[in-house]
Each structure stands twice: as structure tokens, then as C-alpha cells.
Length: 325
Image 1 (cartoon, rainbow, N blue to C red):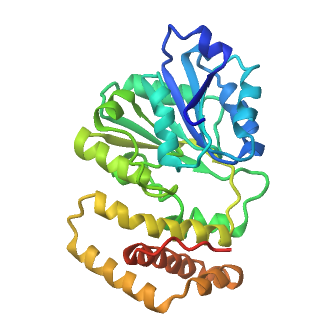
Image 2 (cartoon, rainbow, N blue to C red):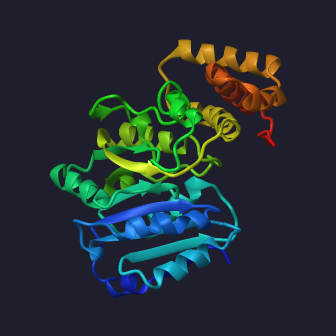
Image 3 (spheres, helix red, strand yellow):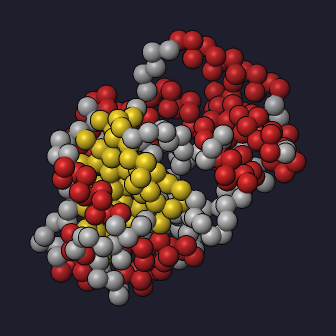
């Protein structure tokens, strides 16, 4: 049955006392990685266990993730809330499921491949206590783990290839709302309640967070502040092949994003149409896939740019997303 929920003993015991922070995590088929990630969330320092909750939405996993989470939560002293369904509906739907049961004044939205430092929740909470305005939100950075050593491709993604990864700013301060990356971001629950959650017509893990950031700013006045020292670890091996799939879906999802978000740049729209037409006519999908295994380092940017615009072209033409294999 879809729409099932679970609360561990700690969550049930403190049900009368809302937490200060809700850590919101969607997950899908990552059972083998969840325990490491959850242990780090449960061992936070500088904050009492009853002052935050971990809210997980299992998006129809087929690897027994829900059972894994429940078994782990039975022995945890931190509040754990799980919402799950048997069908996969995408990360936007899963996050909305988690938001619907989250009770914290502050929502800390992250991913199922993000491992936080031990003072992570306390630092997010301290920032919001110093910036009490409903419109104030905080963005942190994600970095690769020290071990195993990141590959040259992963290092390239966070430097010269950042346009195809997380395009974090270079310095601290207020940043545009289209940097609302849901790997390490926190905001007031009241702002989300007023402006609405994630658009569930975004079926993939792409652009649904950027669209929400733009909407929160345009309709709710959100001001997104960036702290490059607020770091968490992105524990996810990215290869050229997996990045071709991901960036192709980025391009595919970008068409819906442009339709949802007002764009005052007619030159950009004109250029985008031309790039889509060129990609549709000149760049076969199988060629891009072949390039992923053969392209040397200096060709990585071209490979991913082609994947992005081929994805956008397929969305414009109404084609189903291509399943690279």
C-alpha cells in the first residue's frame, strides 16, 4: 500500500514537542549506503537529539530500503520518521512526502548520498537563529570524500566542469535563487508552507530544486545566502558514463524548467532553440554514449554539453527520454 508511515520510539515519545530542525532526505535504492549516512546524522553534536528529527521518504525502492531504515531506527535515540510508497514517483514527490510529515521550524534538505560532519545540524540551526527572517535561507557546499580518492573526472567536475555538477559560487554571500541545490540547503518551514513544495511534474532528479528556488524568491522573497565553509561529503562515485545519463536528463528537464520560470532573456531563448535543433539533427545519442568511454580529459566538456543539448532537443520534440546502456 502507498502512503505508509513509521515513527521510531524517540519520535513517538517526543510527539508533543516539535523539533527545531527537520532533516529531509529522499531515497531510492541506496540501502547499502544508508546506514553510514544515517549514523552520521544520528551522531550530531552541539544539539540535543530531541531538537531535530530525520525525515526520510523512500521513493518505492526495490532493495528493502524501508526495512533497512526501520531496523536501524529501532535502536536510534534520535527521532526518525519514515514515509514510503511502493511505486517510484521521483525525488520531487518524495521530498513533498517528507515535507508533509516534517514538524521542524527549520527544514534542512539533503540527499541520500550526503554525509554530514558532526556539527552540521547545529551550524544550520545557529545560522537560522541569527537570521530569523522567514525569507532567509542557507546554502552550503558539498565536497568529495578523501577516501576512496576521487577520480580525475570527479576532480574535473568540481573545477573546470562545475557547470555539469554543482555550480557553487567562489565566495560567501547572497547568491541567485537558481543555486537552490537540495544537497545542503536549509530554510524556514513557514516559507515553504506559504509558497508550496516541489513541482511533481519534474520526474527526474533535475531542475525541480532550481524551479522551487526561483519560485520561493519570486513569490516569497527568499534570499539565499551561501557559506562555502559549511561543507558536507558527497559520497557518490560519478563516472563519465553515469554523468552522460545525468546530464542528458538535466537537458531534458531544462525545457520544463524554462516553461515554469519566467526568463527575461530573449537572446538566450533564441540560442537555446538553435542549440536544440543542432543537437537533434547532428548528435546521435549513441555517439555521445560512445564518447563517454573513449573521450580523453580535454573532451569531457564537449561530451557533456552534447548530452545536455541532446536531452533538451528530445524534450522539445516530445521524444521519450533515451535509456543509455
